[in-house]
Picture 1: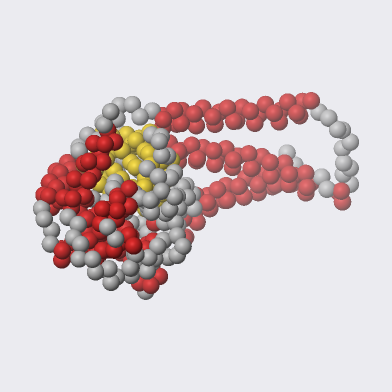
Picture 2: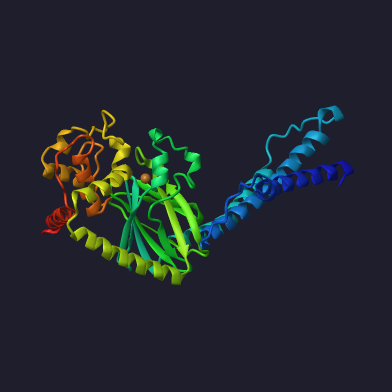
Length: 394
Ligand SMILES: [Cu+2]
C-alpha cells in the first residue's frame, strides 16, 4: 500500500474508534449522564444491552470501511491530481458483493436478536404472578399468590407540587413525578410473571431497568416476566398517552432479597386486616371529614379543583352542585360507577371503601355544601357486595 493510503486508513480507523469510545466511555464520565443505553438489572435487559453493543461495534467496523473508501477516493483520486472519472455503468460482481455481504451481516445479527426475543416471550416456570391493571391515572397491583392487592398512585408531595396554585417549587420535591404512595415490591432472583391489563383506556407499564415495556389494554391480558438481579429502587412511567393526567402515573419497583420480601408480605397482610377492621367500624363525621380532605386532594382535586370550583366545561363544580347536595344514593352511584359520556370515571376499584365514604362525606359537607350527610364505609361495602352479586348472577 502507498504511504498516503496507509495514513488515510489509519486516520479513518482512529476517527471511528475515538467516536465510539467517546459515546460509550468518555461522554458519560464527563457529563455524569449515560449517553449509551443502560445495562438494566435483569437478564432480559442485559441481553438487550449486549445485543446493542454487538450492533454498535458492527456499525463501527462498517463505518471504518465506508469512510476509508470514501476519503481514499476523495483525497487520492481527485481531479487536480490528473485522475479521470471511470465510465463503466454496470458491474455484476460489485452488485453481488454489496448484496451478499450485508445479507450475511443481517442474518448474523438476527440470530442473537431472535433468541433474545423468544426468551422474552417465554414466561413459563414463573414462581409468582402479579396482575397489573392500569386505570386513569393509577396502577393496581394484585399478588395472585399472596392475597395482597393495592393501588399505587402519584405520591402526595409530587401531587401537591404539580398544582400551580400550591406555590410549591417542583424542583424542591425529591423524585418529582417519579414517586408513588405504594411501590410495587418484588423479590430478587425469582422469575416473576406479570399479567397486564387496563380498566378504561390503553396504558403502558414501563420500567426501563427491567428491559421491557408492555401495553395495558382493556379487555386483553398481556404477559411479561422479569427476574431482577440486584436489590434496589427502579422507577418508570406510564408510556401510553392515556388522558389528562398521563404524565402523573409513575411506577416504582422496590426489589428486595427474599427474606425482606417475606417480611413485607407479612406486614401487608397485617395491614389489610387492620384496614378491614377500620372499614367495618362506625366512623364519626369529624373522622370522615379529616380523611376525606386528603382523599379529595389526591383523587378528586386535579379535576374538580382544590375548592370544588370545577373546571368548566369538562369538570363540573362540586360547590353547591346538584349531585353533591342532592340525594345521597345518586351521588354514591356516580362516584362508584362513573358517568357514561363524561370524564367522571368509576372509582369503585380505584379507592378503598373507606376512602370513597370519606370523599363522599367530605364533598357533601365542604365548599359550603352543608348537607350534614355522613356516608359510612360499611354502606359502601354493602353496595359494592350487592353490585358484585348482580354482576356475577347467572
Ligand atoms: Cu396511563
